Length: 116
Image (cartoon, rainbow, N blue to C red; front, side, top):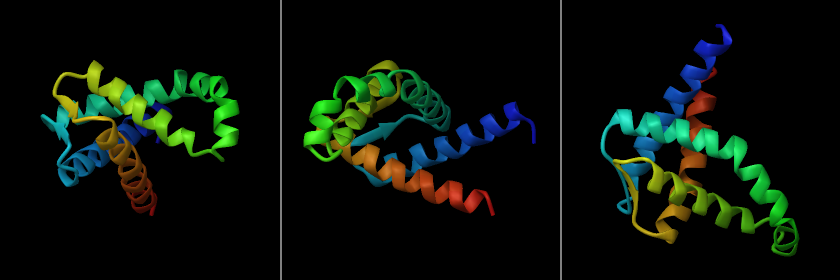
């Protein structure tokens, strides 16, 4: 599998994870599978470019909180994606926090299953 096919497959698995997570959580809404795919791509781009900068900028509070502030950063990034992608809505910070945690769990499970 070449790198572009691998990347597309990764985004498909991520889109399925977004759909499952939005289905389970009543405070997260995804309009369609295409919207879930766009959310997966946008979250991927945000996590590659913006998240490392935020982690470095908040390093002191992250150290004091023993890394728990990373959950806050993840929730804020989910809210940012919600603001950027039409058709994807999260009903507040706590739903964004729950979405980010559950998305991580579902995504990890789907990737472990898809690699076998």
